[in-house]
Amino acid sequence: MSIGTNNFTQLHEQSTRQLADRHAVAATALADAPIAGMGRIATEQTTKVPAHWSESTLPGRADGDIVVPPATKRGDQIQIWLDNTGAVVRAPLTANDVTIGAICTGLLTWLGIAGALTGLFLLARAGINQGRYLRWHREWQLFDTNNHSGPRFW
Image (cartoon, rainbow, N blue to C red; front, side, top):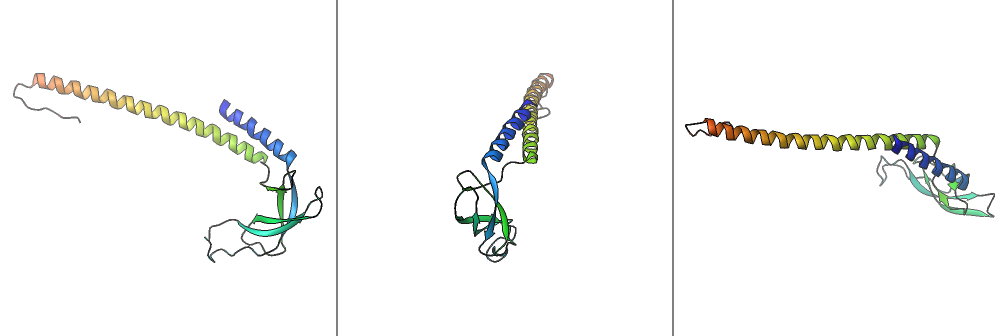
């Protein structure tokens, strides 16, 4: 439980820092995005196209490649995120990202612990069974006067 809580706290702090250091601007695509299936895998969900944007905190226009959906056409406006230096960065973590990340971390931790304990249990049980089968075999040899091999358990 505390692992998920700690992860939630860390992700929340990271989200707060990102929201303070990043801001959204509108970028204009300078080219059409490639059509899926034309030399590209049809399952791709994003691609890069050249774009330009203006920012109120920095003078002039900036140009660069931005990630867009495959259906993007030249002239489309796409929201991008910039850091304080004007570099394109990922969007900040949302409240849902933080919550889902913390829940997944907690669940995966518990599943890992449960899996490790299950593995230890199965390993111990196999060792105990092997010892029991060995003792049965020895007792069978003591009981068997005709030199039969007796039941085999391995």
